[in-house]
Length: 69
Image 1 (cartoon, rainbow, N blue to C red):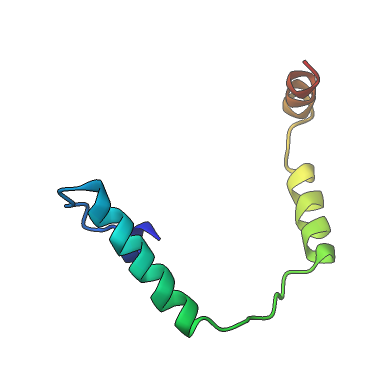
Image 2: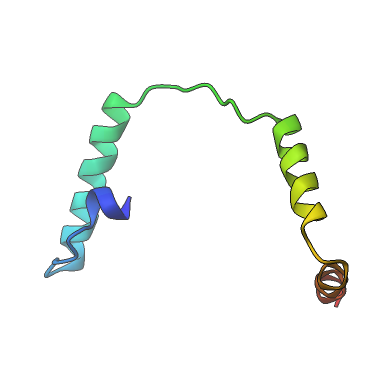
């Protein structure tokens, strides 16, 4: 949204930002098309397992302790 709507950031008034955002929303809603997700829950499970294998054990325990606190 930032790259498509509010760049460059040269608004004199906040109402100009709101107007630009509303215009983008109207234009986007008029042209939006549904899309098919290709990233499945199995893909996510595989990715998380790979990430977990690359996480040092002591770092993983530290983050678990921080979450528990």
